[in-house]
Length: 594
Image 1 (tube, rainbow, N blue to C red):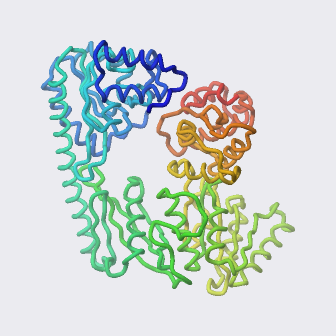
Image 2 (image 1 turned 180 degrees about the vertical axis):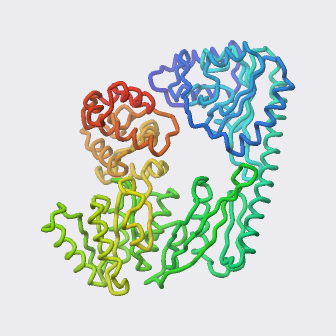
Image 3 (image 1 turned 60 degrees about the vertical axis):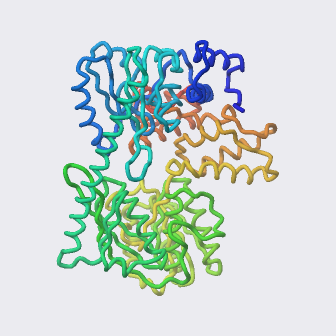
């Protein structure tokens, strides 16, 4: 049974279905899509297709599709038919139109590259419904949910990866002609099949390129352990397969896959393995024919024996009491746990509020509860009267080999004090000292940080925005913490809103929001309208790391200044016109923050 959509009566829903049907029985696929559109609260009379500037035109999908679309474009000549490719989120990546009149009409409804045509924003349409249903669809005329689209006839086909069978995007044909839906669909399926075949051919060429680079690495003068992989292929030489097995191998492969997916990364990555050893991965990209075929890793193993067995690959030991199952979180916990068990000096980097302190306490409680845990804050000033006792205290703590010492917020130390700390610690005999754990915020540290090489292992604790799958578990955990009776719950709409927030304060901010909501005097179900203003950021644009930091700074400033835009602009050192422009870009609505 469908729930009543927000702001709609059952009569209004029936009227919408009647409009779809036009006197006939609506197709089940269209009726289901209209119901989803109503639940997304899409307005039929107002077309709002969000726009993103950061299109990924160097993906296997676009590289495979463009030659096919160009050939089809020549065949269609001056026919009023448009061909489009979208990604799996409904973002139009490329469009071909050979008829000026149709170009104008498509632009008038924002059906152009960069705009998002998923059902969540536009309602029932060829692109969005094909992606939402996973089936080939034709959406003709009045079957469109948005009134502005009802002059168009569309046929869309999902495009799947030929090997993994995962959804890559969709191919869409749009016309204004009252043509046979069957003919449009036959053409759309044929083109989608050609694109999938080209993706398969590209994958084969990528595998050959990766294999060639792998063989060159293996045949070098001193090859050592070599690994090569992309999303479809894994290759390793005999030295690696003999040296790394079991949980160590699974952890190594997980890390290598993550690195291979980051097309910009080249250099060295250090990884703590479950056995207690440390793996150093020297990474080089396999680039042939102006495309990325994967990555080749030269692996060097080092380390000392662990005190007890480490956790299974990619996961954490039971009993840690930590919430979250997302891959970035599990990997950071597993790497930190392996480092603690091996006795390595550990650097935990992460934004404020991500849970670095919680992670350290959980690992200590589980694995080193018998050893004292000491925490040292940065000195209150740079005066010798504060610095010298602070350095002596740290030295005294490290002189006890059984202790675990947490040096918090080292990003707050001045360059001068960082150099003094490095000189004091670098000369120490690690076998006769306590285990040191440093924590810092990565954005606060310069690239030439004097403390960079002081620790054996560096682990990044991911921000909450990179763990959207963990938000539901965290919400339930905090609700139970602040309402032990278990009588509170969170509606699906509220949860979706929470999962879409940037969370500049990370887990600490989410806990504060849920604590305040759980303490409301009445109401057991948290609904979207109950959420505070800080959860109401409506940007759907893909942001770079710098843009995300800028958005979060503006959001924090507005919250601290009670939504006073002018005072926030003054605090940030920018003009009022600039902050308004950036707020529009990042979807920060002043009225929702009041």
